[in-house]
Length: 90
Image (spheres, rainbow, N blue to C red):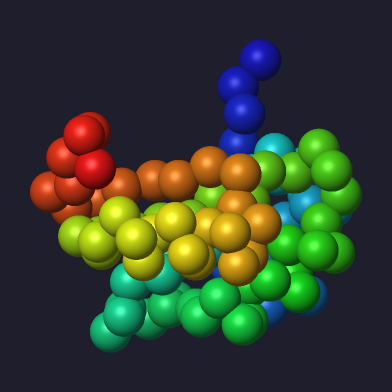
């Protein structure tokens, strides 16, 4: 069975609409200067409100590994998605 991720979530209302529509995962974009950029401070309360079966995913583009780790821990992210030139060894 396919899993569905809805990306670009910026607020709790949209997150809950996506969950109610059957989303398995929600994507949060941590890429500055993009239309759906969010901060860890915005995302953490949304993630805390999600049902346990919904996977919060952080989307990153060419961020240092330390930054990604800090954001993931601050928000409770359970999956990461990379769109830049990140290297597996990082």
